[in-house]
Amino acid sequence: MSSEKASSTENIVSQKYDRCMADLLVKAGVGFSVGVVASVILFRRRTWPIALSTGFGMGAAYADCDRSFNPARVSGTRIVPQTDESK
Image (cartoon, rainbow, N blue to C red; front, top):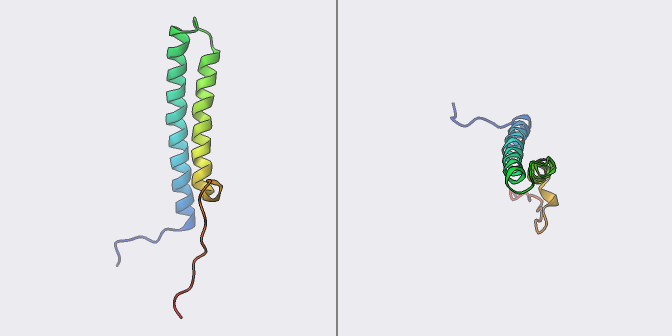
């Protein structure tokens, strides 16, 4: 038996989805933390810096997730079709 497992498409998609969700939680959490600190120090405890920075974090995570699921949208990337060299 081989030590490598065959990766099905479903497993690849689920791994990408899991990475996207983890990235969303991390980036939204960092944005929330930065917003809280900015709100307390700079903006006299207003709520808009928290919402704005959390939204920036979620937007960055969405952009990264979009790139991982659709690599053709990355500028400067070219998808080359696979050629059959068995001839």
